[in-house]
Image (cartoon, rainbow, N blue to C red; front, top):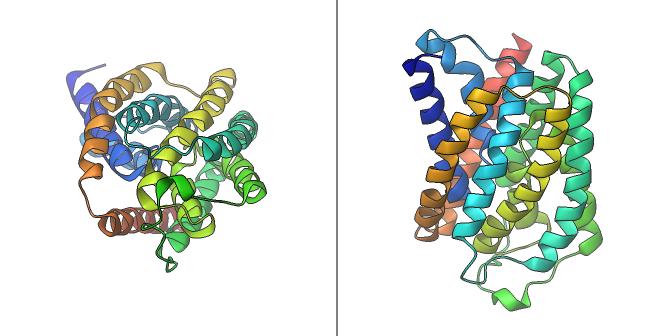
Length: 259
C-alpha cells in the first residue's frame, strides 16, 4: 500500500464525509461513484462494486455517528421518528446487505442507479413550507415512516449506502419534516441502518479493511466539520446542493450501465 493510495482514499473519504455531515446523508451517494471511478485515474487498481459497497457500509457507520454527535444539541433530533424509522431500516439494511453477496457486480450497480434516480426525482418535487413550524409540534405518519424505512433499508443495504440520500427526500417530501430536523434525524437513522449494513457486508466478506480504515479516519475528522458548516447555511441552498449531486451521480451510473 503506497502513499498515493493512502492520500487518494483519505481525500475521497474526507470530501464525502464533509458533505455527509453538511447535508445529512451517510455520504455513500457521493463515495460510491468516487471509489469506483477515481482511484484508476491515479494509476491505482479499481475496486469492484462489491468492495465499494463493503467499504462504504463500514465507513458510513462512523461518518453518521460523528455527524449525529455534532447535532446532539439544538433540539433537531426527533426521537420518535428515529425509533420508528430506525427499527425498520435496521432490519431492511441487514436483509439487503447480506443478500447483496449473491448479486452480480452489474446487479449492485443497477440497484444503486435506481436508488439514485428515485432520490434525484424526489429532491426536485416542490415542497410545502414546513420549516416555520416549531420543532416540538412536528407530526408524521408512523406507519408510512416505518414502511418506507424498511424498503429503503433493503435497497441501500445492497449498495452499502445506509439510505441517508433517500431518507432526506422522504422526510422532506412525504413526512413533511423541517429541513434542519430532517438533516439531523436522517443522520441518526442512517447510523442505525449502517449497523445492519456493516454486519451483512462483514458476514459475506465484502469489506476491504485497509481502505475502510483510512476512510473511517477521514470521516471522523470531516463529518463534524461538515455538520458545523451545514448549521450556518441556508436550508434551500442545502437542498439544491443535495439534489444536484444526486442527479449527477444517477446520470453517470446509468450511462456506464447502459454503455
